[in-house]
Image (tube, rainbow, N blue to C red; front, top):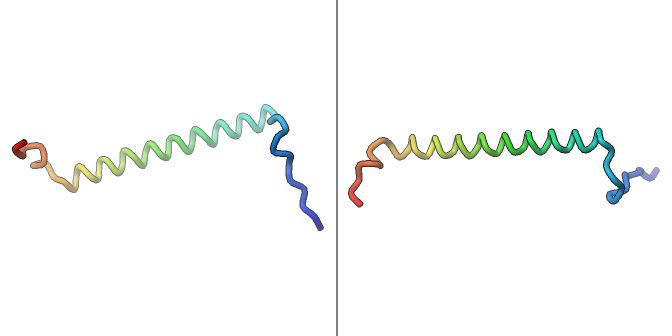
Length: 55
């Protein structure tokens, strides 16, 4: 039994475009949240004295 896959070059329907857009926004928000989380954790691990060091 051969499985049918959609043609990758056909134009997307409006519903498919909306779903793709929602998925892209969700991925962007998750990535942004991870960046903020990693930045916050890095600053927290360095401690408050990191700003008081001599340059």
